[in-house]
Image 1: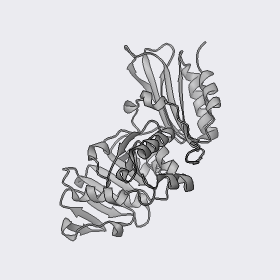
Image 2: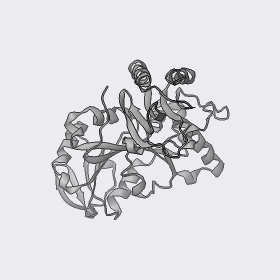
Image 3: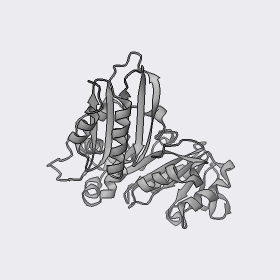
Image 4: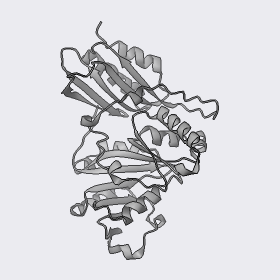
Length: 327
């Protein structure tokens, strides 16, 4: 089972269903004076409305902008495009990739975690998903990929939030939290947000595994008022006692081998026997990493974990975890 790596230039994957506002956000990044050197990989560059006077140079389909950004397009293969950009890595400090509106971010995340061609110089810093607040319910009803985009994310932007009522927005927030309780959630208008909320996330860095109480609030995804049912959800587990690390690793390994493609993401903090340090872990699909990090000090010792995926059996997950707890 491969481990998760973090080194090199940080890459942010921008995703969201069709019409969610990804292109508008890219335009903000390319036009605004934010003082950051960002390389943007756009799937269809012709769809981005960039003023011609902003372009100061053009070479090999790579456009340099006056504000320090550069922009290029995916013409064939993402890895080929990334390698082309790396020849100019002295010109940027971040990479933002726009995913297609109909694609799950999972396979792209795997590419960064598995491909030796790119993970030596780049690392996936986080996944951002924009949600069209006005049309979110119809997207969630008709397209499973809209659920997957939410499930994989570290930051969720409820865009066009001004087009629905406060009550409707709160209902949508609760529903989204039921799919992914660990992501940071922002309400946005016209994709306007401080870039500091989107960069340097450390989404795949074990140093940043933090499970707040919000991640363990029970959500009812089968909301009869909207009749939107889907088999993608989250399961949060809290239990006391100490965990046998060998038993837990064996159980989690078997879970990911048997059901890894359905367990999109998992993360947790464990109270391991014979240790005063917290054991933290996270996984993406079948990729898993865990280690001891920071003493418990005055923090109550308990085991907290969240699983996000398809067809998750909450009772079986609870039983599996409980089988690793020392009596």
